[in-house]
Length: 341
Image 1 (cartoon, rainbow, N blue to C red):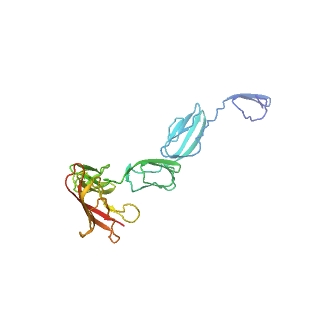
Image 2 (image 1 turned 90 degrees about the vertical axis):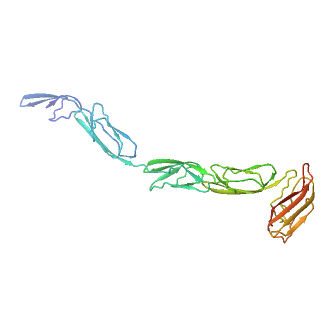
């Protein structure tokens, strides 16, 4: 045997593309043959390792080889294939007479369900607890906390991201706070005869109930008396009361409605106050049975009470003739004062 490269074996292993010939001699007779060998490249296909993905994610498998043809598991023939769900995906790549195949498995996990509910409001004296627990889940809230439960009593935007099997879902909620109703009619005051004053109880989304049944946010005061209002909203009710005295205002008189003779130096005595000289002055204090417990005809002299005077409400009357410009005639005033030791 004689091959084109001078080798003399009966067999020959070609190393690459080319023209190969051999001469064979038997008994002085020689035969010769030639072949042209074309070695094609083997197609390379590698779809990668199996993958785990989350619902809704997409992946593209690429088996491209120049000049090749393709056959995927579903019969499609493109060089690339888009994966949208779990399954086993395979491709056979043919290049000339050479083929190569590969396959890969995709596992898809569902997104965790998380629902904080719709936007809502909360009364200021209550709290709201969110619970997004899922077995195997992890959590991150807008403030960085990582528990499944989150409790709040403050207005704001709340969101949570729940992760399970590497897949995450997020939900959010806007929380508003409704303040508890508050009403303050102010301190007791003196109403001058012939004038009016207005009591204001208005607040956001309040409803109103005054002592006479009226239901507006403002109340007109034109006479002395005790006035009270109850305001309410979806979160509760609040009430306030105010006492209004009346005078001519040429020499207005103010009398406290309570005093506490306990030696602390605060509100130790009961004394009506006025700024003008007065004659024919007499101040009397009565117990609940109508008996006079104290009286004086000296302007500026205060009732200090006796140690045996019991706590409770007393009635007082005042008669005086103001000596102010425009004053005319006697004034007769009365009221209540509470003794608290």
